[in-house]
Length: 462
Image 1 (cartoon, helix red, strand yellow):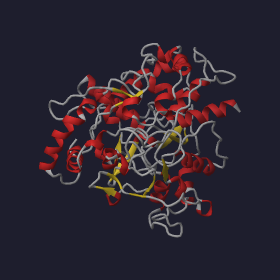
Image 2 (cartoon, helix red, strand yellow; image 1 turned 90 degrees about the vertical axis):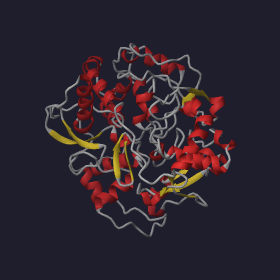
Image 3 (tube, rainbow, N blue to C red; image 1 turned 180 degrees about the horizontal axis):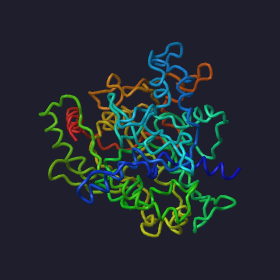
Image 4 (cartoon, one colour; image 1 turned 120 degrees about the vertical axis):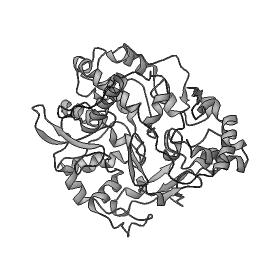
């Protein structure tokens, strides 16, 4: 049974990365940097390295059997739509902005070791590919995904029982626990990356979190929320293949991951698609640069980014992600091949890297755990709902242009599961859950209402 367990963990780990397929076409570029970036793009769009997790008809079965998505919380109604659209919306998936057959972004054909097309597998875009206003974007965090329910549906479609995991993958739509997944994978390896008979107790307890936008990475010197991992560490993003690969295989594939990282860092944020009040935005820029730029930087041709790790006692946001990484887990990582070039920094005090705000209009909900639905609520802490429901659609019909973010409904009580359907209850964001607190980042509370709205108008332009 052990190989099946490792294969499952590797399948889950593919939410972050894939390796190249032999079928990728030769890129047509003229400079070394452009060549590297284009190779990375081809890896992301056409690559398939993992063995199939499901048979080739599993997604078709899911499409045919997915229950209709309820409208406005009423389980007796359902949105009239195409079956494939319904399945994508139910599980929080999006059309691919590149050729991907009939599969949604994040799902792709996979081949067995003999090279034959044998089934389906997930890739990094299941989490790192989102949509807004009917347009899908590579690198936009997927804030509608219910990964656990998607995994269960695909496994049942393959005539198998859904797996039982030893950690919380996600308690609802829009968050995912990639960090604890990495910890589990490392616990199954010795420092030389040989497989262990029994897992190590690494002592970490990471929560689920929001998926950050990839296009901010080009400005940052580090990769993750806690700023402990060097931004050039291709090895770090390879850790999610610990379910299958050996150290020799990791070494062989490292250049491919470096290409992928180069492509990720080349991505640009989408532009705000609606009219902006230019005079209000100009006033907001002055307020922003006076009150916000110390952490988030300045923007424009001469923009700066301070690359600042903000201590927990200053930022005041939920502590679980920053404090959930144990010293034992860092030591174990650094003792392996992964930590030889860019070791994880154990000396840092717990905190969160203040992110660049490029394309911030498109990245709601806010904070590192997705606990704040709009920029207005981010800048006025008493406007934050402790629980909220949002529509599964990313259509602009559900976008709050004034407050910038998503329109939400405040439930009077926790939604019941109608007829055993978990869709509504898992659409509820509840800030009382572990790691999902919505407190902190109260810096906007000192602004006047006119200053706050001016800053929001300015943020639309970034």
